[in-house]
Length: 313
Image (tube, rainbow, N blue to C red):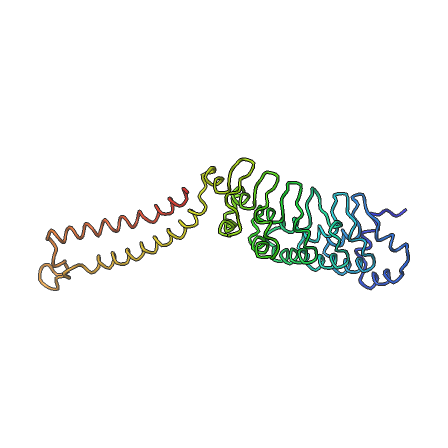
């Protein structure tokens, strides 16, 4: 007897023409075969999505749209691995064939939108497309929370998805997510502090954000930065300040070196003191030379000190 594990790989390895012939048979047995699952409850559609076989995915969905609603043993609908891999075209096919919100679930209370937020930064451009498709196809899914009471904005902040945060905050009718609290009472701004996602601390500048919201520890997001002795905003400003200081140092160094090689009064052009400074031996000249040496010394010490000061922050 042929096992399910033997049947599914065979289906996925068929040529496009052969698959077309398989589709044309149109028998009940063929539909039953498509719905067969392995020991992990994965169907042929799950396999095709994970393998990146877009044409096979398209054929399977056209033949049996109900496959889009079948969850495996991990409670993953086919849309879950599609969003996990940033397959926007596949996600569009699934949503077009079966857009029921209750059918597209993931493990541990995660929705497909949460999954898209948790995806890696390296392929994030595709995931923005997936998020946009999910929001447009099923806007109500934006209000769904995971087992920790976290929204899609929480998920985006935790994983440092700056583009996703911008997308959510700029999307109409998603204002409620800005100050939404999870089971620990943390808003998206709290999580930006807890996970040290300082590049997302731009949320603090959003006028819709309530900066006085406290979590279960009775701390606001700003209190959290003080409690952890973190100064991200100051750090960001210091980067600019240090750069400006170094620029000024370069200008001072240029003027100082110019002063060294072009001494006041000029040089003797003839006589026994030829080549020596005309003002050499005078108290004012000696004082000026000493000041120039001090300036060069300070410049040499100032630049490393600036970097050390920044690192200690």
